[in-house]
Image (cartoon, rainbow, N blue to C red; front, top):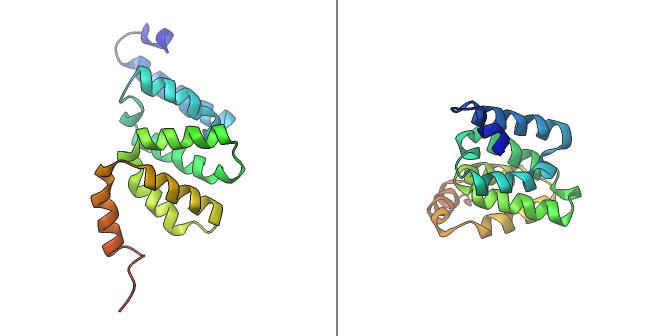
Length: 135
């Protein structure tokens, strides 16, 4: 990361994000998440500057969560908690469509770990979403 910063101006940010995207394609989202924790610690907000990347990583991570190791699951949880403001709605949409009970359980547990600032969105979705019972 530091080596990229020497390239000057903001091009290093773009290069780092492109390298992350390439690495995800090479080794998979779950295996990249540990590195992204270091990026988030060292450069807060950098990954958030590309919401499409955050959402794509999360979707790919959730898709592989059933066969993931415990450390990979934990990395996905930590990633989601750091980026919950971007991932809340997408996590609810994935939960709505998910058919595998183990993945649904993972998502419900994850959503239960989100900060209290997510509560108004949960309440709104519960009142107006697919979980509302018809009259």
